[in-house]
Length: 179
Image (cartoon, rainbow, N blue to C red):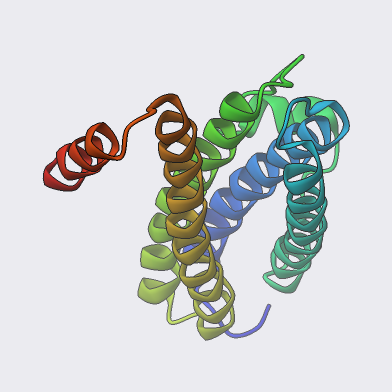
């Protein structure tokens, strides 16, 4: 033990194992997106998904190491991951809109989970977990916002191409701006 309350550390490690499980399923989903993406955004999203699953892989290792540091055992079977994850595995997803939506929904779930863990670790005065999780939250909130903007921008771009006249396009963008 590293000088932390044993009961509170146990609860924190249980929540970290749920986070580990969620990251592990998210990793598999993003690998699937990377392998199966189709359409005109293939090259752009294929590269982004590889960056994302590499980052997730590193986070999985960091969370597992944090659980060990707290004196507990990280979950390590797919069965455990499936039973403890807050997101579900996705299958046969190749549509760019569905893959981006899956990433956004998963990031939102992770951010919510990590805020709860941050509250537990703060109550425990566990600065190591606080630092780890608050870094994740800050990074993922930024990623969520950027992905959302890019995703919305792509939809607007597609709709923009539908319009032939500048006048209609201007009205359309004014309509979107006021929403």
